[in-house]
Amino acid sequence: MGGSGLWAITALEDKIVQSAVVEVLNAVYEVDFLGFSYGCRPGRNPHDALDALAVGLERSRVNWVLNIDICGFFDAMVHGWVVRFIEHRIASTHCATHPERVESRCAGGRQTQCQ
Image (cartoon, rainbow, N blue to C red):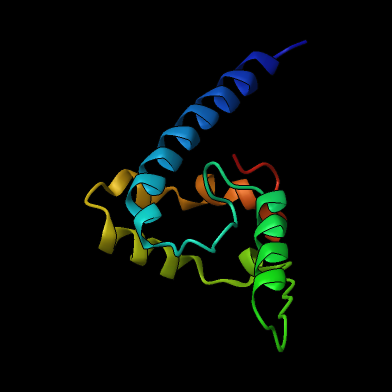
């Protein structure tokens, strides 16, 4: 067994901090999203996006549909800029100093579990 207890506490603390930061960021940035944005937002999921797409295709004349795969986006972005954007928008430096904890919800460009 050894020192595995410390790792469990650290993981729990990370999850608590991560959840708190996500709540703050959601409260601040949710107002900026357009109604047809479904990615990694509270109360929305891929099935909602597909339902909205089906309704839009049925009700409107559509000339084209754009499908983009952003796999690897979070790996390629400059993390320093993420910190600067968060610092600009949020007064608390606690959110800005740990963006990787928030970003891990969509780790490696793959949505892991958005709620």
